[in-house]
Image (cartoon, rainbow, N blue to C red):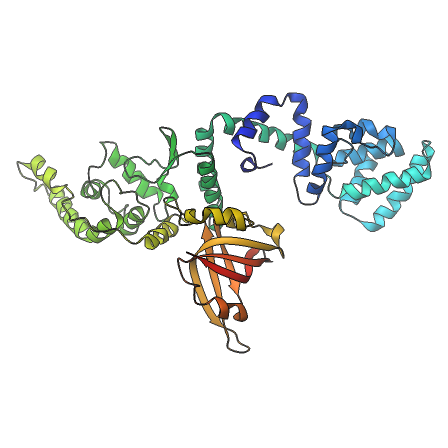
Length: 462
């Protein structure tokens, strides 16, 4: 029961209306919200809505299945049925539950005979016992541990309440948790999903700022400020140096920053990553800063040497005031495509303008999923995706030397590899280029838990 799957308004209603005696419904939905038992959710909701539609194989099952509206949801319900109707001890009932859950055929055969015999001894007909056993067997494989469900349900309730009533605080904490809790592509996908949820909730997310960003995500006014640790190549030592230097006051210019921080800890790669992430946008655009950085750093190194040698003169303050002005000629910024690539490189996803925004109507109408929503459950299923091509590799097949391609496409929720075989590639090759936006149809492939899409067709969006 993910927090992203409930709209804020729905959560407020949930938090307001659900009383403690309704927690059993949340617990059951947690147990059902999994592959397999999800198909039972409509039946569960129908029973909740209209009690007259609930049917029991025997009245004695009502006390066990009433809380889940006639559906067998929990492992413990299997055990209760065996105990009440067939005279099993709870230890014996647990063995039955394990045999059913793991579909052990040899044990199931023995347990079925034992269950039917026990029911007959307690006065139930053999036919009814067989029907009840079949009913249990059908649902037991999907059974979930009730204490786990209750715990997860309570946490989901708390989470929904906090998100509904303290949205900025909640999303700031969530972004920080996703940043610290994972690594690699999965972290980028989770972060992208969280940022997309912020946009849906109309929460402002401010980009990195050298004078305002903290170590992690932080609350600023009515929005969330991007943390420095979310930028690649900006390590703990560099952040510590920046934060220490900022204690004396904000950086007044790019030169002022270069002079105040320890350039042994805040090295060239770190500064370039900060520039690409727009952390210095208050001083100049990316192109201007990238061009002047090598010149500035040499001048600053010379000033630092003079300071260490005690060679500043009597008029030190007036000298430094003029020296630390960014008196450079501002240049036109990089092309939009280059800026997208820079953000993708140092952050892993886009935080400024989304190149897919102008296609949002087409995406809403035609696509079946966001890229980050594709998962192993979609294996062998057809999907329609829209994404920007960030990487392309063309190879030739060993058999007949025909060209095929491997693409990486991404949107604001994540990225995925797409495979285009020779016959399809021949038709699409004219527009399969880096930074082009395409809509594609293909089949999801899961190989060793690595997802890709085998492309059937694609069209460029302009």
